[in-house]
Image (cartoon, rainbow, N blue to C red; front, side, top):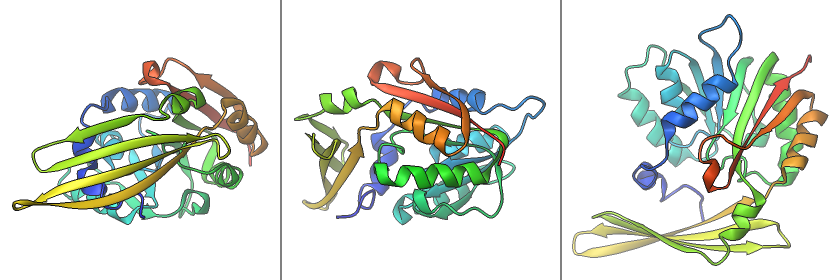
Length: 245
């Protein structure tokens, strides 16, 4: 089954309650560099590009990277209709295979992007981010805490509109240290409904492990933020400064 394949078309509709303005404020403040109002930024695991476009609309130059062609197609359609001065560039890449054309002044990864990455991919990803972020630039991201992912074990949730229904079922696997959740997507086609399926996997990364891996890759002043966006929903944030190459 593909991840963010069939769901891509409906993702923005199912995430209308996400406080994107709060995430944009948080990342703009976290990545701020003294004396620079506009930055070249990487949005890692950018999805349909909602936050990418918000940051671009604030005057920053954005590169969005995601591994889902379907999500990037939605991002491209939204970008074509956007009025930002410098439109984002999108690349279809796996996070651990990140390969940019040059350096950026900061990078961020939002809304579970980090949880989707398996632990074995993190050292290579952080190494590549250390190479592609300019010295003194920062990498900031948010992620679900391990405790929150465990609380979703056995949960069943439903999102629906007039033309689509999404049934979400979660199961936490202690051996994998990850939350598996299956999605059944029912879309209306005339008087009938078409069923499509996706299976997602989010890893319960311990903050201490993330901090240690970032420091091993050359990042400094790594700090955990417990009062960032959606902190009341089990979301933590981390900010790291890139040391010299």
